[in-house]
Structure formats: C-alpha cells, structure tokens
Image (cartoon, rainbow, N blue to C red; front, top):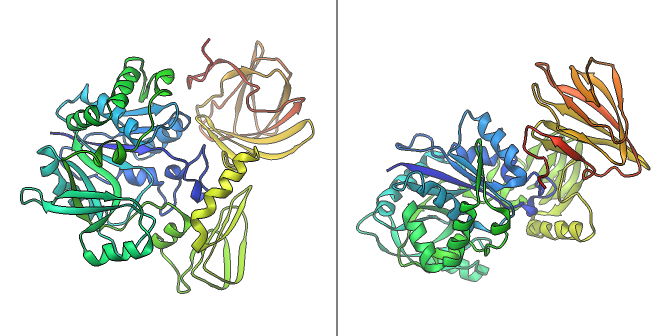
Length: 474
C-alpha cells in the first residue's frame, strides 16, 4: 500500500505580517532555514518505504510559486490541486482523496499542513511509522504532540485505551483551546496532547467518513472533480461549483464525530509557527536570548525577535520585543502581544490598503516586478525576467511604457515589430499597442519600466497570448 503525502498550503498567516501576506503567505517563506516551510514539509517523509509523490492543495493565486518551490527540490508532484478560494481543510482533503482514489484506490494519505515546523525529522518519521498499522486497519490517525508547557494557543486531544496493543490510542475527546488553569491541569494529568493537525489514513476510509458526517461536502467536491481540467502538474476544479462548497475543518467535519479516531503521541520539536513569538521559540537564540536575522545591531537588548530585510536595524535597551522590517512596512510589538498582529492586518484591509496583500516585490511565473517610485501620472518598476521566460502578449488602455535594459538581453514585441535590446538600450510602448517582453538569453534580464498615463493599476492589462494560461476566457 503506497503512502502519499497530502500537503495543504492554505491560509495567509496574518499573525506573521508584515513578512507573510495574502499573495506570498507563510508556507512560501524561509523562516527557520534556507528552505521554505513548504519545502521542509515536502522533504519531511523522505526515506519512508512505499512513498509516493506528494499531492499539494493550494490557492490558485499561488500555483506558480508552489510549483517552482517543489521543482527546486528536484521533485515532481503527483498533482497540484488548485482551490479557487479557501474553504478550510475538509474540502481540501476531500479533493485530494477523490483525485487519489481515482488513480490508486488502495492508497494511504499522510496529511500535513505546509506551514508547520518539525525540528526532529527522524522522530517524526518514526511516529508516522507507528501509525501505519492502526491506519491500515481502518483508524483515522492523528498525531498528538507531547506537551512541554501549558500552552493556551493549541487545541488538545485526550487519549483513551491503546488500539489493539499498538503505540496508538483511541481518542477520548478533542478539546478547544483552554485557559491557563485548564492547560496546567491537562499537563498534570499526563494523558492530553497538543493537536498537531497532522493525519494518517487510508484514502477510502476518509471518503467513507466524510460521506457519513458531511455528505454535502463530499457531493460538492465530486461535482468539482466532474468539472475539472488538468494542465501539466496543475489540476483545476470547477470554480463555480467549489465556491458553493461548505467550509469546514478536518477536525470539526470528521475527527470529532468518528468512532475510529486514534492518536499517536510524538515529540519532534513541532510548532505551528502561528505568531512571531512561536518563531522566537523554535529559532536559535544568542546569549541574550535574541533571535536575529539580517543586518541588526542589538545593544542592551534581550529576549527579542529582530528581523531586518532591507536596511540596518538597531535596537537599544529593549526586552521581549518583536521588530520586523520589510521594504514597505515595519512591525514593532511586545512578544506577549504577538497574537494581536492579525488585528493590524484587519485594519489594513478595512482601510483599503495593499500592505496586507502584496510585498513591494511581486512574484510572477516569469520573474518579478518591484515598485521603485511613483507620483501623479507615473510609476517606475524594476522587472526581472528569468532566462527563457516571457510575459504575455498584452496591451493597456490607459498607460504607455518606456523600457530601459540594465542587464541581459531583451526581446521586444511592439505591434508588428520584433527586435532585441542590449544593456543601456531602450524603447517606447505607446498606449493601446500590443507588446511583449521576453528573455532569450541565459542570464537574468533586468529592465527599468517607466509607466505614464491616467490610470496605472495592474488590472489595466488585456492579454492575447500567454504561456501561463492567464488569458481571460469569454
């Protein structure tokens, strides 16, 4: 029986703002190593026998970023299933199970969020191995983290009797996030674990259980699969149908209702990295208790998280503080108020700002663009285009563009003309003219783009041809 990782890459990680944003969320960030959280998750089960290629479920907006990060590991996915909009984890897992059941009905799934940290990978692999027997026999296995503190930010699982003499236990009950006194009592009793949100089960068993407890979700997901389309590694479900799907979590939809839930305890340095204070807990600290990343000068500073992305960050005489500097925003917060960062994100949304949504540098499948300057009727961007990549053939109703090549070779389509530009050469794209920029060379192409016109929004793009399938279909 082959085991397939199902990696759920949803959520925006709003409590890790300003680093995590809607269009570049927490799973895609390298927070604890040179690899992103998604990449660390993709490598987590390497070495297990009978391991199939992973299935990823992610938002359609993130598809190229997820595909690129997986490719950087030298891996090919079984599929990347695209959600038009987040509907929580139960529909996401159901889509993956239906996809897998149609291709390998005897399969088993290990379900992992893409934004968790596990520092002791070998111990986690052993825990999964301990769960294979009970899961193969029909249990829906979850993994309970052996708690080392009375944590009030996690849900808990209370264990019952062992499952047929295995290292798994029947689940007595799931418990919502407790207050401190209750959490302390759980630790004292010794039969409670943190709920990790990681699961192991036969694919068919999940479909049986979701049919029993949430048939409406299963029916909607089946209809989504009937209206699906496959494009290379991407599997697109019907947008119209999926938008009607109820939203529910794996826990609420099934795990808290089934009589077949089992828990395998493990202690492998797990964290859901839900806030900056959680990241401070799992990262290496200096002699003053500080986590320091980037160009930071810390004087008389203790037990703080200090992150500088674009410039020198200096602190003097502070204790227990979070300071995160990015190109367009700076966060300063008490470590004990880390959970409240999400309220800043809500305020940004309510005021119609963009800092919760995108960074100054915005990634595209062909490369990226970054705002440099802007004023009335103009803005300046730096475009970077990967070797062999090209932008769509497009036009704008309200703006003209000037392109100056600063590195590499640019191939330009402007109307009926196609020509190359070298470094220090430029061209002009009039309003309403069809045009395309591409990189025919072997090195990164860098172009300074000066836009001018009455409207400069990113939605003023009409695409005619696009190798990334972004042409609007009528």
